[in-house]
Length: 402
Image 1 (tube, helix red, strand yellow):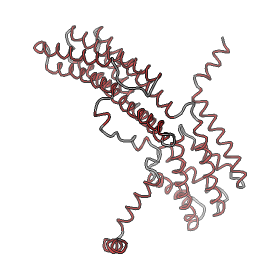
Image 2 (cartoon, one colour):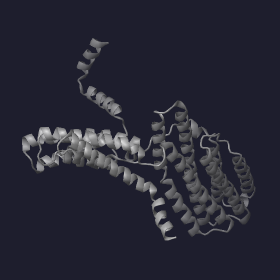
Image 3 (cartoon, helix red, strand yellow):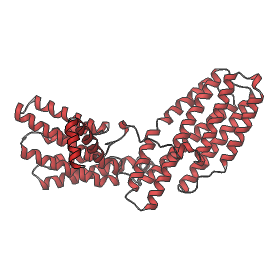
Image 4 (cartoon, helix red, strand yellow):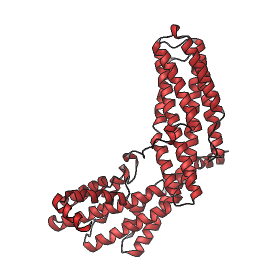
């Protein structure tokens, strides 16, 4: 029994253990390769490999490129500073300053922004010269390359597999929270109950950037695979958008129920009807999550959503028929719950134009790693530099080559 409990500690932490093992192996290989390539080149390669191994091949590749470019800019600035100011605090300050500015211009994430000056300082450590600096920069390239190659093994599943798990997990969490709301409505919930639901719904909504990053990673990864895999990644992308809508509506429902209780609630029959409606939506989400795990790429039409819409129509009729006995604001809140459950049904079926026809922006810049690719960065700076040229010279240049 004790042995089983001991093994269980490793099983439940295997996700983290695998990342630790991959990072350790990447650092060890980078040390060996870097040391074979250059004298004392293993340290820089191992440090860069440890900093670059991330949760996905996509992130590691983009961060590795950004780290190399940013470190090169920082190291180049430091060599100039060394030439004019010598090896001292001014050189160190300029190295860190230029590295941080370069990381900002490259739109690196928070972690990579710190990694760039760290790597630049290691590159320009003791025994600085143009020769050693160039060798350390090459060691940086070796470390980043090894980290990128091994990062694909940092997870037990593919990007698509991680996306499927994430979507199913968030769908289940929405279902559990909706079940608690439904039971609370049937049992005449208190304001404290509503506050706890709203707090949990807020935490749930904070998961939206993570699911968006994960599904974008799956799309990018699928571009290197057969067309069928790419089509499946697009299906996962639409499903992730639908889950995002479900999370938003779950939070909206929690907020409405809080306001509903804060303003005195509604009569028993209407409260029971709302509970039944939310319970139907919760059950549909639970079944949907189970089916999605079994076959994530099947058709999205769910027969349970018809029950949601039927219950929604019934609650709407009851609320409007009893408008004289209910305050106008409370009727609006009841209809708000009805509207949220209908949107959840539409999201399960993926029939809403809001899901298919409205483009969804990528994850926020502070959640991304190298949010703009090097090619896009180069085009952006090319346009900016071109605009600095006087208009007369530009016109003359265009007439010459057009």
